[in-house]
Image 1: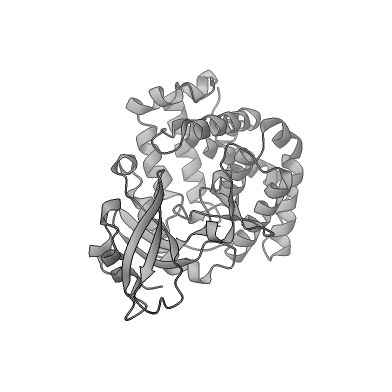
Image 2: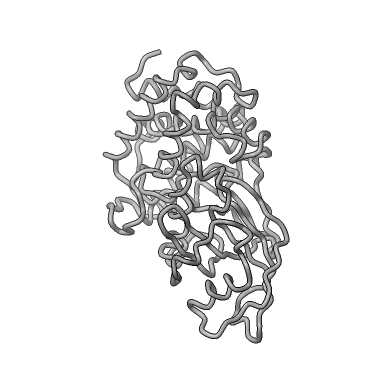
Length: 355
């Protein structure tokens, strides 16, 4: 889809007007006019989702009445370094969405510039979508379906080199930028000692130790074989249409990364710790088999388990997610699951760190 003038990349919900929508949507639809834009509700989070009703003058040219407008409209979240995430999601829906084969929301407009990106997409509630709230898990069958989705995405893009999409980073650039802030000596201690975070082992409360571990992981990832990753593949990103399969809603962290980034991060959130411990090896085998059947490589048992363990460190991100970005109950649920996964799998050992 075409982007539009940078002047339309507004940064405040109050600037989302009928005139703004007309300029955005008419970029590919000459003559289209939106006469009114009424906001029904707003979901504040890492990115802001504005659900609106549009009224058209004459022919709507196939556009729906109800849409979701997503972008960086909260400066409190932007302060945590999330501007590049908004920029990347706009680029994703502009350039990659039209050729992506896996289920994802339909976009009608996307634009991107430095530190901002805006997407007008379908309001999935119109199709009766059910959204995972990250607090309540959907179970083993849904986990297996999601691993199939990731395996197909990874197989289709296995070995992708930097430059296929000039805007797509190696590694989750937005998360790394945000995490540099959250891991800073000034913020790390207060964030990991909050009530929402379970009591962590001493080495996981050591900011220097955790920063060194992530530096080692990112160096390892940058030198690995890459696929296109979702990049933030936790369960809170999932939706499903009645009668359909699980799919990912948000794409503001699409990146080039090793397959295990998505898989370990997803499984850490997808099941309660006891069930994950009982099911993770069989679920990993299901991912491996689906990946191979879709044209990807056949991973060995040792490679599968070792890479999964190493990349479980990504879940530590949630120990530092501020409640301005995610609700307190979500942070509490996710930190409990991820802390257990990291303690069980000890990624630090594979990153050459003793404790």
